Amino acid sequence: MNERILVVDDDEGVRESIAMTLEYEGYECVFARSGQEGLDKIESESPDLVLLDIKMPGMDGLEVLRQLRDGGDVLPVIVISGHGTINTAVEATKQGAFAFLEKGFEADALKVNIRNALKQRRLEKEVSSYRRKADVRHEMVGESPALGEVNEAISRAAPTNSTVLIQGESGVGKELVARAIHRDSKRRREEFIQVNCAALPEAIIESQLFGHERGAFTDARQKQIGKFERADRGTIFLDEVGDMSLQAQAKVLRVLQEGEVEPLGAARTIKVNVRVIAATNRNLEEAIESGAFREDLYFRLSVIPIRVPPLRDRREDVPRLIGHFARQFCRENNFRSKRVTLPAVELLSGEQWRGNVRELRNTVERLVVMTPGDVIDVAEVRGILRFAPRVGGSEPARAKTLREFKETSERAFLVEKLREQDWNISKTAEVIETPRSNLYKKLDQHNISKKQDG
Image (tube, rainbow, N blue to C red; front, side, top):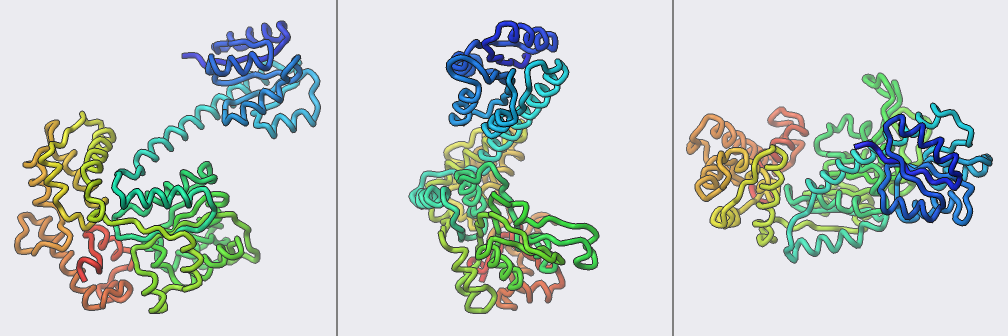
């Protein structure tokens, strides 16, 4: 379908001249002779772009543009004027015009501006489509009272610039809460930058967060923009903030207090306007007592604390989550819809799900992928649960396959070593000779936590 362009101009000669140029290029043209008629045509014809004259009787072009933008319309507008002045051009740009052309313009200039404006519109539609898909993927599903309290906290926190501390067990959906806050905030059109503090080695976390200048350290071959600077005017999500070094904590505190970051090796600070949302599955009060976390940073982060309940406290949401994940994975894998029977749902609902929503999600994905037919029943669920990695661990001797033996053996080994080191992650990583970041990945992979395995 050809892209549609609305030409709003009271001069019939101008309309006909523009129409000849545009129709030759394959565009469909729609016309309006006044500002009000232009607004009506935008409503009824849904054009892809507007060519808008400034000087018209009654409502002029600038007022049309102002009403469009006040109504939230992002339709690209190219303003045309026979009496062009710098002030008019500046005002049109302020109101969100894509370009400003004086009458008497060359046809090529018009065509180039139209092509660029339509290209930008297509890109914006594509980005909007991706955002909608991301919103669906990160949707918080459920109607339990426990989840209702979280949604209520989100709705109160989102419109503000206050820092938020999200706490909860591994797998409960802390990232979803952070994304929901950003999505409902005034910063939603800006960047949402996520940083997994546990996955970043201590040696580079400051460089990642605050950036560095070329030559700041041995491997700094070029300048790097830090995450805080990238998130300027947007939101930064510090996941697993409890695993950040004390030195990095001090710099984060400075960002919260002063609104500025200092890249490594830089001689000056950079002002940033960033909303900080942090999350952790650790008990930060205990970390403060042990000297592993700064008390002043804790109070700065927890202006609005939100605790996300474990799945065992919102069991009534399990059936809805199962249906949501099944539809999602069928759609993503281009499968025909697969129905989960009521007995299968009941069997899944009776599980412990100590890995919370993440464990349930992974199980439903395996069911969708591994079930050849269109119906997922009790037999399929029992088959998947039999071989799924179990939280709390099964004994290696009971393993049926080599892979299951390796998984259960590794899990048992890690739990034993963690208990020996009183669940000190750094010491355990040192004892078993693996990077701390790798140990965290293993804990997540095997759903290991002090609360359930300690």
